[in-house]
Amino acid sequence: MSKVLKYIKIWWLMSKNAFISILYTKLTLVVFLLAKIIRFSFFIAFLYFLLKGTNSLAGYNLNQTLFFFLTFTVVDTISQFLFREVYRFRPQIVSGSFDLVLSKPFNALFRSLLGGADVIDLITIPPLIYALVYVGALLQPNFIQVVIYIALLLNGLLISTAFHIAVLAMAILTLEIDHTIMIYRDVISLGRFPVDIYKEPLKGILTYLIPVGLMVTLPAKFLIGMVTIQGALLSFLLCFVFLFASVSLWNSALRYYTSASS
Amino acid sequence: MRKYFTVFKISFQQEFAYKLNFIMWRVRNVLQIFLIFFLWDAVFSRPDAIVFGYDKAKILTYIFGVMLVRALVFSARSVDVPGEISEGNLTNYILKPMGYFKYWFVRDLSSKALNFAFSIVEFAILFFLLKPPFFWQTSLLFLILFLLSLAIANYLVFVIRFIVSFITFWIPELAWGAQFLFMMIITEFLSGSVFPLDILPIALQKVFYMTPFPYLLFFPLQVYLGKLPLNVIFEGITISIIWSLVLTVFMKIVWAKGLIEYRAEGR
Image: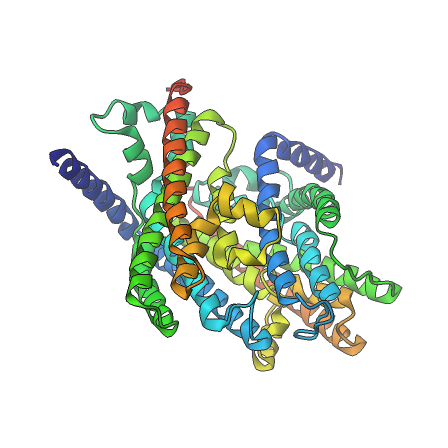
């Protein structure tokens, strides 16, 4: 228990420092916040006008499509809020300054994964959750559906965690790649819309191999009443497998870290 | 002229310095195309459907066209300009016996050449994999007008990018933020990269047509698809030329004022 409290305290300190550094340049904060709001508004407008013209997308109506999109946005935004430090990891490996992280008396993965929470994303989370709840309520789910939806959403965040750990490991193994995290973002963005719109084999890949479908489509589908409890349980099981695999990959990758340039 | 040719050659070679990086960048572009391709494929699940004035062949041609036109119009090495200004490295360039804008224009051309070449290969692979119905424009006149609108788009985006980059003269910490807001969000959406602008209400389309953004991508593709009558095409080309001239003058003014403000911090 004391270990957990210690890590919560460390996370709070690291996040506070990250927030202060962003708040120091207020104009940058405003510009990035504005950019995110505009991008979100454009997408909502696009979906609204698209569905107004077509009435449905792969069998889903406007509210359902918006709910898929909002579920994706919430998972993606919370992930970015928590794991922003991953975007700054590669330079540490290239310069060898990762040595400093390894020499600290706490877990290097924890520091690399959660070391710099993003205040800009934090600001956008409450209104996003409000929009999610508002649109979700229009779909009239029952209590059980809501509870399992929230559990699946947390499961989606854990899958996202597994992805980010894998990206960190890849940064150690392949120094040259600068775009791994952005490729992750692009793959995840395929979940903006229900994975049902994709054709096989892409649909299968997005459901099981790169589980974008499990992260974002499945929770939303459960709330709509299109997934059974067995499907939800399978999702929890796969999440465990992905987490285990990514942590193993991280542990293996650490052995290949050479401290080059340090 | 020879020195700019040398700049082109060196810049082209530099793009190959980080091969895996470049390939990953192209992979990202393909992934983005997947999203919009399948989205529209789902919208046109009934092959005979006509939505927003598009049939399936025309909308999927639009999506594939986005891939090629984006590579040609939006690829640029001048994305580095804000960083050069904020770090004081601009000094290196203005001391050299070269036109600053010509230098970056040539470097952008080399980036466009490389990205366009790769996008043609991607186009061929995706075309083979996805087998979309495709609209081939056969009218020589429309093809010439399409190429003309593309040439204007390339110049227009160059000028817009520089105006945005010059914000860094006054606010160095916005070197990346301004690019993100104006070039990656506003320009991408309003140019029709993410979705064709004619799904929006007419009133909104009219407003957007008064801005330079639709002429970067949406307008050239509309010309290719033959969706616009000739008088509207000529009107569009005229507006985009006017924008090019006005923004060029504005860019030169901002550049002149920016140089006065420039203090070569970091050097």
